[in-house]
Image (cartoon, rainbow, N blue to C red):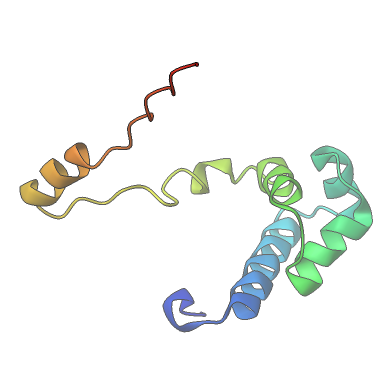
Length: 103
């Protein structure tokens, strides 16, 4: 299994495409059927599976159509390792800049 921490952008994209293909095959679904369920073209499904190329919108549509949306939940969540980090994260939340006064 590919370790994403040491992989290139292209390797990660291709690995995700391969994993989606494995999921599709495990569900005995054709590329055409998946494309129809996802609301994307069959070529889009082929590009995802073979090249790891798709828009974020198309990739998410395919993931949802495969019933894998729950796997997206833990992505990019802020992981706090200590109370100090939690306090720092709370203090560094972005605030909206004040409006400029009109002349």
